[in-house]
Image (cartoon, rainbow, N blue to C red):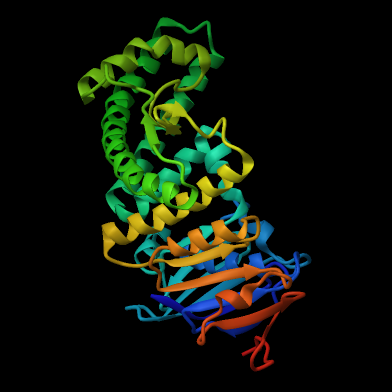
Length: 380
């Protein structure tokens, strides 16, 4: 699958236009703040119905406007068009003119993997950000995992609501206490069952991901023995649904005292180690940057291995901070892809990476102009 055109309306600073992007490699060249990343963001939204910047839908709307839309026409796909609209505070997704009931339908149509500065959070950020990355990685390959994750979060949200109410009323009557325990007795087996499924899949996925990631990192940096380690919150003493339910019962008073569920897959951790010792905490900024880039390359490779398909790559200034030798090594390990979009500053040597059929656009004030033809994205 690849994108043939992108049309946007009131999307950040991008001109309201339809742009031809029917090439395997597309370069977007321009100074900072001109709209290169916004263009990638529009493509990403057509793949996930959400921004990779982690912002609310309303923040994507151009200043002074209330709504936005982004639409792509597809090539080499069973589908022809995807449209994402944000109107009157509500977001809708249409696939070939029919409204999608669930945005997860997009995962089977236009899988994109983005490389961006925010990826550093997967290395140096919070445990939540690392979980987000590995959850996305697994969800791309396993729709059942995504469903289990959603169910777990739904039960967790209900359980936390009950715990907050109990925490807010410490002088509970015997009747209220019995009512609270009855609700938690019903929720705990569900939380345990869904949580156990997540734990089992996360452990296997982390092991397989590490088998791809470690050799990649060694090839590019020469540093060996790098591994991804998954540490579940519930650990080994809770290995089945029944024992997990009992464990939650034992911890109930502590959870009520805190007003939140203190343990479970929502507290799982991932770490990057070298020979069994935490690596990311001691890594230099350059090493962390490479870790983030190679995480995405490993993600793309795992996606292809698991699904037999290639993704679309969105690469936002990924080569900018690398020295020439590391750039060369990184490009040598790039994953297979159906289409790739790169952003460059004008002074970067992007011509070195250009192929005979590469499409190159200059981006200025949200307008895209083809460097070969001198044409711009046009209103249609």
